[in-house]
Image 1 (cartoon, helix red, strand yellow):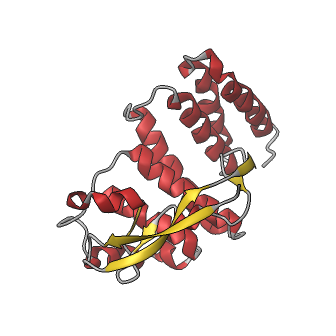
Image 2 (tube, rainbow, N blue to C red):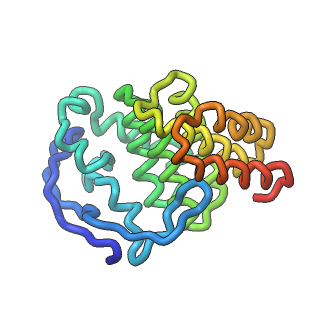
Length: 217
Protein backbone atom coordinates (compact mmCIF):
# COMPACT_ATOMS: atom_id res chain seq x y z
CA UNK A 1 0.00 0.00 0.00
CA UNK A 2 1.24 3.51 -0.83
CA UNK A 3 -0.18 6.96 -0.16
CA UNK A 4 -3.89 7.31 -0.85
CA UNK A 5 -6.17 10.33 -0.78
CA UNK A 6 -9.79 11.41 -0.79
CA UNK A 7 -11.63 14.64 -1.61
CA UNK A 8 -13.48 16.27 1.28
CA UNK A 9 -15.51 19.45 1.69
CA UNK A 10 -14.54 22.29 4.05
CA UNK A 11 -15.70 25.72 5.17
CA UNK A 12 -12.96 28.23 5.95
CA UNK A 13 -13.32 29.67 9.48
CA UNK A 14 -11.44 32.81 8.47
CA UNK A 15 -13.34 33.91 5.36
CA UNK A 16 -16.30 31.52 5.04
CA UNK A 17 -15.28 30.09 1.67
CA UNK A 18 -16.70 26.63 0.94
CA UNK A 19 -14.29 24.41 -0.97
CA UNK A 20 -13.10 20.86 -1.64
CA UNK A 21 -9.59 19.68 -0.79
CA UNK A 22 -7.47 16.57 -1.07
CA UNK A 23 -6.74 14.83 2.22
CA UNK A 24 -4.64 11.81 3.19
CA UNK A 25 -6.35 8.51 3.99
CA UNK A 26 -3.33 6.18 4.24
CA UNK A 27 0.46 6.28 4.05
CA UNK A 28 3.34 3.83 3.90
CA UNK A 29 6.96 4.61 4.66
CA UNK A 30 10.20 2.72 4.85
CA UNK A 31 12.77 4.20 7.20
CA UNK A 32 13.19 7.78 8.34
CA UNK A 33 15.74 10.53 8.83
CA UNK A 34 17.22 11.15 12.27
CA UNK A 35 14.68 13.94 12.91
CA UNK A 36 11.85 11.52 12.02
CA UNK A 37 11.13 12.63 8.45
CA UNK A 38 9.55 9.44 7.05
CA UNK A 39 10.74 8.04 3.74
CA UNK A 40 7.31 7.77 2.16
CA UNK A 41 6.52 5.21 -0.51
CA UNK A 42 4.57 6.68 -3.40
CA UNK A 43 3.44 10.31 -3.57
CA UNK A 44 4.69 12.56 -0.77
CA UNK A 45 1.68 13.13 1.54
CA UNK A 46 3.17 15.99 3.59
CA UNK A 47 1.47 18.83 1.66
CA UNK A 48 -1.91 17.13 2.12
CA UNK A 49 -1.75 16.68 5.89
CA UNK A 50 -2.98 20.28 6.02
CA UNK A 51 -5.97 21.83 4.27
CA UNK A 52 -5.53 25.32 2.82
CA UNK A 53 -8.33 27.69 1.87
CA UNK A 54 -7.94 28.66 -1.81
CA UNK A 55 -9.33 32.13 -1.11
CA UNK A 56 -7.46 33.47 1.95
CA UNK A 57 -4.76 30.78 2.49
CA UNK A 58 -5.97 29.79 5.97
CA UNK A 59 -4.15 26.50 6.72
CA UNK A 60 -4.89 23.88 9.37
CA UNK A 61 -5.37 20.18 9.93
CA UNK A 62 -8.62 18.75 8.49
CA UNK A 63 -10.05 18.18 11.98
CA UNK A 64 -9.47 21.85 12.85
CA UNK A 65 -12.18 22.76 10.34
CA UNK A 66 -14.66 20.94 12.60
CA UNK A 67 -13.73 23.25 15.49
CA UNK A 68 -14.66 26.59 13.97
CA UNK A 69 -15.15 28.33 17.32
CA UNK A 70 -11.41 28.06 18.03
CA UNK A 71 -10.64 30.26 15.03
CA UNK A 72 -13.69 32.41 14.32
CA UNK A 73 -13.33 35.99 15.61
CA UNK A 74 -9.64 35.22 16.26
CA UNK A 75 -8.28 34.63 12.76
CA UNK A 76 -9.38 36.69 9.76
CA UNK A 77 -8.30 37.20 6.18
CA UNK A 78 -6.46 40.31 7.36
CA UNK A 79 -4.44 38.43 9.97
CA UNK A 80 -3.49 35.81 7.37
CA UNK A 81 -2.36 38.56 5.00
CA UNK A 82 -0.02 39.76 7.75
CA UNK A 83 1.42 36.25 8.05
CA UNK A 84 1.88 36.07 4.28
CA UNK A 85 3.70 39.42 4.29
CA UNK A 86 6.42 38.11 6.63
CA UNK A 87 9.79 37.87 4.81
CA UNK A 88 10.17 34.13 5.45
CA UNK A 89 6.95 33.45 3.53
CA UNK A 90 8.64 34.61 0.35
CA UNK A 91 11.63 32.31 0.93
CA UNK A 92 10.11 28.95 1.76
CA UNK A 93 8.66 26.38 -0.67
CA UNK A 94 4.89 26.36 -1.19
CA UNK A 95 4.45 23.08 0.71
CA UNK A 96 6.38 24.43 3.71
CA UNK A 97 4.43 27.68 3.61
CA UNK A 98 1.25 25.81 4.56
CA UNK A 99 2.92 24.55 7.74
CA UNK A 100 4.32 28.00 8.48
CA UNK A 101 0.88 29.61 8.17
CA UNK A 102 -0.70 26.90 10.32
CA UNK A 103 2.03 27.34 12.94
CA UNK A 104 1.46 31.09 13.08
CA UNK A 105 -2.31 30.55 13.36
CA UNK A 106 -1.71 28.12 16.22
CA UNK A 107 0.51 30.73 17.87
CA UNK A 108 -2.16 33.41 17.57
CA UNK A 109 -4.84 31.14 19.01
CA UNK A 110 -2.72 30.05 21.97
CA UNK A 111 -2.24 26.39 21.10
CA UNK A 112 0.12 24.02 22.88
CA UNK A 113 3.73 24.84 21.86
CA UNK A 114 4.31 21.12 21.28
CA UNK A 115 1.81 21.18 18.41
CA UNK A 116 3.22 24.47 17.10
CA UNK A 117 6.72 23.00 17.10
CA UNK A 118 5.53 19.93 15.23
CA UNK A 119 4.02 22.10 12.49
CA UNK A 120 7.30 23.95 12.02
CA UNK A 121 9.20 20.65 12.09
CA UNK A 122 7.08 19.31 9.23
CA UNK A 123 7.64 22.57 7.41
CA UNK A 124 11.39 22.00 7.72
CA UNK A 125 10.92 18.53 6.20
CA UNK A 126 9.19 20.10 3.19
CA UNK A 127 12.15 22.45 2.78
CA UNK A 128 14.57 19.52 2.87
CA UNK A 129 12.59 17.62 0.25
CA UNK A 130 12.76 20.78 -1.90
CA UNK A 131 16.55 21.05 -1.33
CA UNK A 132 16.15 24.48 0.27
CA UNK A 133 18.62 24.30 3.14
CA UNK A 134 18.38 27.99 4.07
CA UNK A 135 14.61 27.77 4.53
CA UNK A 136 15.00 24.44 6.33
CA UNK A 137 17.29 26.09 8.89
CA UNK A 138 14.74 28.84 9.59
CA UNK A 139 11.95 26.33 10.07
CA UNK A 140 14.16 24.15 12.30
CA UNK A 141 14.94 27.17 14.46
CA UNK A 142 11.23 27.81 14.95
CA UNK A 143 10.54 24.12 15.60
CA UNK A 144 13.22 23.82 18.29
CA UNK A 145 12.04 27.03 19.97
CA UNK A 146 8.51 25.72 20.51
CA UNK A 147 9.43 22.10 21.24
CA UNK A 148 11.85 23.33 23.89
CA UNK A 149 9.14 25.57 25.34
CA UNK A 150 6.78 22.58 25.52
CA UNK A 151 9.34 20.58 27.51
CA UNK A 152 10.32 23.43 29.81
CA UNK A 153 6.67 24.25 30.59
CA UNK A 154 5.71 20.57 30.98
CA UNK A 155 3.15 20.80 28.17
CA UNK A 156 3.78 17.36 26.64
CA UNK A 157 0.68 15.47 27.75
CA UNK A 158 1.93 11.95 27.02
CA UNK A 159 4.96 11.17 29.24
CA UNK A 160 6.13 8.55 26.73
CA UNK A 161 6.71 11.39 24.25
CA UNK A 162 9.06 13.31 26.56
CA UNK A 163 12.25 11.30 25.83
CA UNK A 164 11.49 11.42 22.09
CA UNK A 165 10.96 15.19 22.09
CA UNK A 166 14.01 15.71 24.29
CA UNK A 167 16.08 13.73 21.78
CA UNK A 168 14.51 15.62 18.87
CA UNK A 169 15.47 18.98 20.37
CA UNK A 170 19.04 17.75 20.65
CA UNK A 171 19.00 16.46 17.09
CA UNK A 172 17.64 19.74 15.74
CA UNK A 173 20.37 21.64 17.58
CA UNK A 174 22.92 19.22 16.10
CA UNK A 175 21.58 19.90 12.62
CA UNK A 176 21.74 23.62 13.35
CA UNK A 177 25.42 23.14 14.34
CA UNK A 178 24.84 24.23 17.94
CA UNK A 179 26.98 21.49 19.48
CA UNK A 180 26.72 22.73 23.06
CA UNK A 181 22.92 22.81 23.11
CA UNK A 182 22.77 19.48 21.30
CA UNK A 183 25.04 17.94 23.92
CA UNK A 184 22.88 19.28 26.77
CA UNK A 185 19.63 17.91 25.36
CA UNK A 186 21.10 14.57 24.30
CA UNK A 187 22.43 14.08 27.83
CA UNK A 188 18.96 14.75 29.26
CA UNK A 189 17.27 11.91 27.38
CA UNK A 190 18.29 9.17 29.80
CA UNK A 191 17.07 11.29 32.75
CA UNK A 192 13.49 11.42 31.40
CA UNK A 193 13.32 7.85 30.10
CA UNK A 194 10.76 5.93 32.16
CA UNK A 195 9.80 3.05 29.87
CA UNK A 196 12.49 0.46 29.20
CA UNK A 197 10.72 -0.42 25.96
CA UNK A 198 11.95 2.96 24.70
CA UNK A 199 15.57 1.84 24.68
CA UNK A 200 15.54 2.55 20.95
CA UNK A 201 15.46 6.30 21.59
CA UNK A 202 18.41 6.00 23.97
CA UNK A 203 20.40 4.07 21.36
CA UNK A 204 19.53 6.67 18.69
CA UNK A 205 20.52 9.45 21.08
CA UNK A 206 23.91 7.85 21.72
CA UNK A 207 24.53 7.49 17.99
CA UNK A 208 23.63 11.12 17.19
CA UNK A 209 25.51 12.41 20.24
CA UNK A 210 28.64 10.75 18.90
CA UNK A 211 28.11 12.43 15.52
CA UNK A 212 27.68 15.73 17.34
CA UNK A 213 31.06 15.36 19.06
CA UNK A 214 32.69 14.68 15.70
CA UNK A 215 30.75 17.55 14.08
CA UNK A 216 29.27 15.32 11.38
CA UNK A 217 25.95 16.51 9.88
